[in-house]
Picture: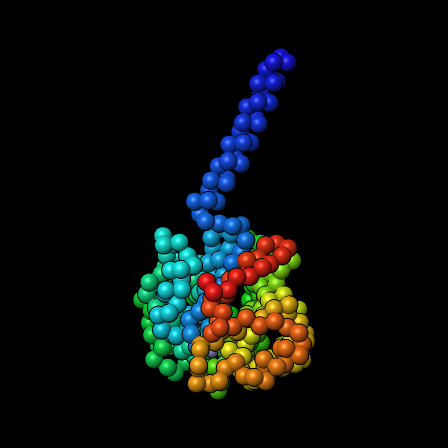
Length: 289
Ligand SMILES: [Zn+2]
């Protein structure tokens, strides 16, 4: 009996070793460092943000303009991975939605989140026809919409009104603003939301602190009010902006405001793509990728 127990013990240890060895092999093959990657992609003037979870689920928030997003995605995702779990379109402007059309043509997209605000551009009409052609399920979202991918949880905090079927005066005003939490780490993605939306979020008490902030509207002075920045109180910010853009983004006023609040800034026009590596209780970042 005694020797049988010893043998059982040895078998159990061997099994554990096999599981551990197997797991590490799997990680090596999948090129997985175990952290969630938050990419602020370098797509020129516009926004395209990729969230890549340790479980290889991908969420793409906007696609920039044109096809730059495709080369960025080919650098960030394994060549064999041509599937994106969720695409979130923050609003209908071409510097956010244009590249999504390229993504829909070249990737299998499982689901699309959008507000349903009606656009008037050719880009918007192409987006709708691609969704129909490829039978991609869509969900109309507004403040309160929630989603989770393993330990990652996201909640929409703006727009506070339902824009489904409505042609808005300002597309920026319909921007999807999302608060994301992964363990104790948090990040806020803002689309091109402007000061009136910031004030609305503050008035409704839905705005809160986030470790990382994607600065709204490419650093335009129409967003990022001091009150907004003080409530979010980010440890670090990233601005998605094109080199020498005709809007003068990011505006000096916003850079000064961030500096005065001692908030560091990363910029895609100067730093290239930015990748935040987020674990359940810490984060770091790399630039120039
Ligand atoms: Zn924009």
